[in-house]
Image 1 (tube, rainbow, N blue to C red):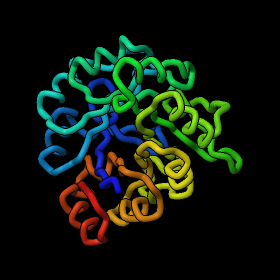
Image 2 (image 1 turned 90 degrees about the vertical axis):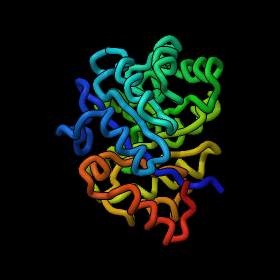
Image 3 (image 1 turned 45 degrees about the horizontal axis):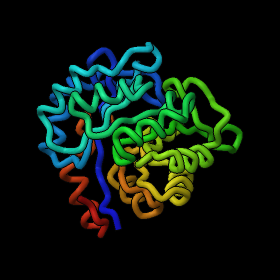
Image 4 (image 1 turned 60 degrees about the vertical axis):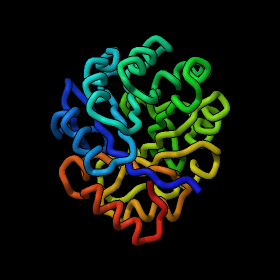
Length: 250
């Protein structure tokens, strides 16, 4: 049984951490390097760093910032945003990232997953899937949640596993920033349909939401942003709470 992981997510735009609701309405949440250090001190198990405007603005992820953050932390660190090639991935891994996250680029060019796994190993390759309910069907969206694809979410996650992905970062766009709880149905379906770890993302609002997603699905990690950034759920308290619920955490 994999121990569950608590993972803060740093959404970066123009060098600052930001957070919105349903992928829009962004507000400033602080300096990424300072937040990263704070989360290590609080006992976070991993960090995810997403340059949310990189794909849209056709920019590479900010390697200098990755380097700055990597020097201050000692926990696994995933970086995504604008990684369109093995060269882009090499840049952030050389800067200190442990894993790379691909989303839009993987949907447009699934061969990228194969190439990344061949170059760095599957354990370094995270495929982020942004999912939303469209007339009763969960569909994959790209370009920061702005463009619907032809992929049904369950078909896509099964496909990326066969291509060499080592982990799925599943974000429910319907839940994102709402604090109404993780979307249990799709998280359960995805985590039961693949044999690689699935991180649940989108909707965490209280400690009970983490207990629910760990108890009702096979998700191995719970990712959140604003509730951590704005001090609504302190990570040490969350971990104590989960231990009291007999949930095995790191």
